[in-house]
Structure formats: structure tokens, C-alpha cells
Length: 256
Image (cartoon, rainbow, N blue to C red; front, side, top):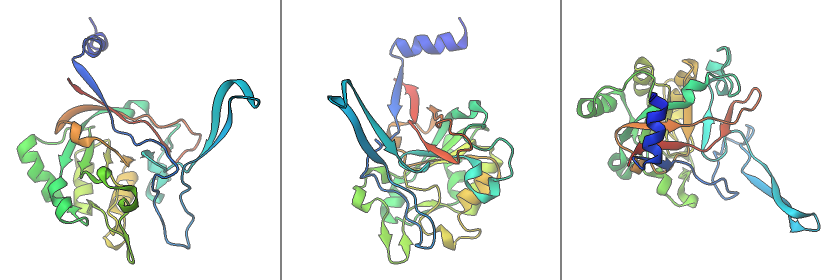
């Protein structure tokens, strides 16, 4: 049997379990809020077209609209200015093999519970690697913080000086690039820390990762159900022409 057939047999035989890492798209789901002088991310909106009634007697369907970066979503390299000149860097032109990759899950829930402004550094990653092995080339790096378990009115954690949420510094991002990670995923609304406008460089996850052709995943859920190594992540964005990103359904395959 082929490797694909073996995997299919394991899946159908109950040896593989599928975990949904996605929040439902809902009008109440928080979106990132930028300073007033910038354009804003549109929340998810939905409108009923018909529901087995005079508008359509046999069918139910709805129109929806949202920003490319609403809800659980994918960031393509072209999303950031540092990635704008990378060939084939929008969601419709990216190589599709990058959408199905294994993952390392870095658990820093304790640190984030003590400090919502926790900053992930290269030293943190190296300490994790001493216990779990080096991050393999081409894998996702997912930061588990349990931020997804917050109530929506506390999800952005906004204060007068902006959002306060965890994220990486430049040293951590550079190490991920050195490890040739396919991308970086988080439970928060953005891959950067809430106060990353004050980092050097500003917004290192976006600036450095996308400049290196890497991907981002935001607003993930259920990372607490994944092992430290080896979950298979399936994260294909919608094929939007010239798209900078896309809402998507992120799934993880793990041993049952």
C-alpha cells in the first residue's frame, strides 16, 4: 500500500483523530483595531437571502462579507510590505504543499497567565528544543497561550496604549526563519504581540516572517489538544485572486 493509503486506512480505522483549530465566523468575533488614521478590518457580516420561503421556497442560503483577516485566518507573505515583491506570494499563487505540514506546539500558557505581555524569545525556543528536539525544517511553529479561551470582551485586551497580548521578539522570529519554519501560528488576533509597535523592528513577526516568504495563522483554538510535536496541520486559505490572506478552517490530525 502507498503512504497515502496507509494514512487513509489509519484515519478510517480510528487511529487518527481530527481536531478543529478554528473559531466559528460570527459577527461578534473580535477583529484587530488599528489607530484611527488607518483603514480598519471589517468584522464578519451575514445576511439571509432565503430560507424555504417566498424568497426561495426550497433552499436556504446567505450572503456574507468580511475582511481577508477576520476570524481564524491565514496571512500570506504579500500581506506585509516586506513580502510584496516575493514572487507567487498571494494566497492564490502560493505553493499548495505548504498548506499541509506538521507542527511544533510551544506551550507558554503559564507565562502568559502571569503576564499577558509575555514576549517569546529565541532563548525560550531553544529551551523548548532541549526538551522536545529541534524544530524540523518546513514545520509550523504554533504558540500555545490559551488566549483563545478568553471571553470576547477581553480578547483584544485593549488599554489606553493599545492591545496587550503575547507574541515573539525579533530573536524568536529569526530563529524560526533559521529553522525554515513554514510559518507561525497563534491564538491571538495577530502574530505579533499587542505592544509590538515598540519593538525593533516594529512588528517583527510580520516584518521578518513575511519578508522571508513565511506564513501566519491567527485566532487558532484548541491548541491544548495537540502534542508538542507531530500534529499534521491542514490550513489551505481560500483561493482569492491576489489575496493577502483569508479566513479558513484549520484542522489538525493527531494520533487517536
